[in-house]
Image (tube, rainbow, N blue to C red; front, side):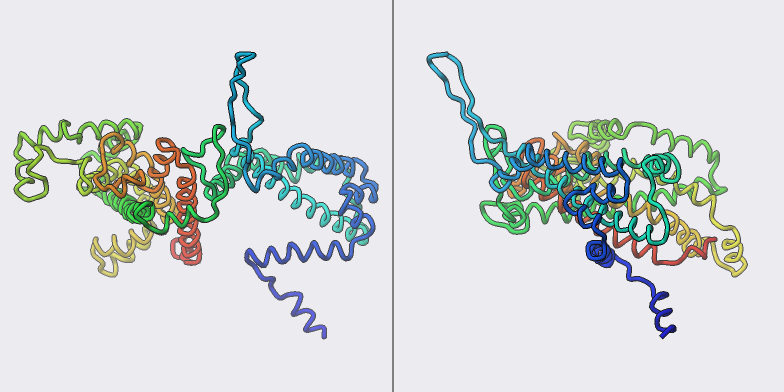
Length: 488
């Protein structure tokens, strides 16, 4: 019996998200079932448990929080949630009164303000429920501590802990509040808009918008004669993945090779070359991209040089350029534009990767290189089997970050093609997309130029899911590699 009990105590607890949620509510159920009268009274009057334990200030503060929540729900929460199901029914109307010679506006509903207020209220309710559960569990913990002879903290003790042992929580409170206000709430509103018909034809405050369920998602994943969003989504999603892979690995490999070349003994004045590439990083990227866009324009300097040197005529003979034009469409033809975007990104991104790779190459364990040389490995074999695995091990997390960043790389695509590239695909044009668009530039154009917020929200959700799933899977596999001991 004692053996089985010891085995049960030493048995590791289940880990994972669902196991953690199960333990969370199991602890709450235990507190409600075994709690004393103070714990049970706190389910309605949240400060009663602290008053029961003679923690007067704690109890009064908890009462104030509960009262503020109730007042907020009465004054703001309930009115907002009452219209949440319809997002408003009263249209804005302006009526001219001939007697007063003035226009009056009726008491109309603003769908966006209703949605915004409702999301904030729902989030506040969720946080209050979490606070209520934590309060119950904390009171039950005080009850169990009292049985073991441990006195509860006074208000003075808690203040001392806030600037002492729990000072890290005090410092984190403002950043967490900022994340909630600037990140979490906007994401929740974005998700909610994806289920509405909020667009240019339903623009508050002059017009109302309402819930449409999953119709926007169906429009994005299907195609029809009247709606080409499905076709545009497949085209742009495919190019987004191709771009992200090529942009990530071309700059990475190019940076490693350039760093290797500069660090080799064959290059004269390596510090000079390294400095020149670092200076290229110092120039703001948007300045570089706008200059390059002008260089490669149809009437730009590069086309002038190609025309005078006969390169344009050669490409026409090879069938790479149409004979109906007298320039190379570097940024105005789908195929040429995609190739040029990749090449320009290589030129812009390699110096940064070179700088990072230089630091990594300087810290490669010399004992492994010496061992490889003793075994008779050539320079290429050392590079492939020692140098590159070490670089990938060190820069693996950065590569994942770069891939996600390139999926959302707005600057390179937008600055190189905006006001230059015009799509020839009518189906893409109907959905306000272009062959060179990424999901993020398509989203930007839908919101800023065409005010199609509903479809932009759907695309934003898809981008978030893609980036989140890729990041989680990649980091999970990377962390389970167990290669730390090899490079220590």
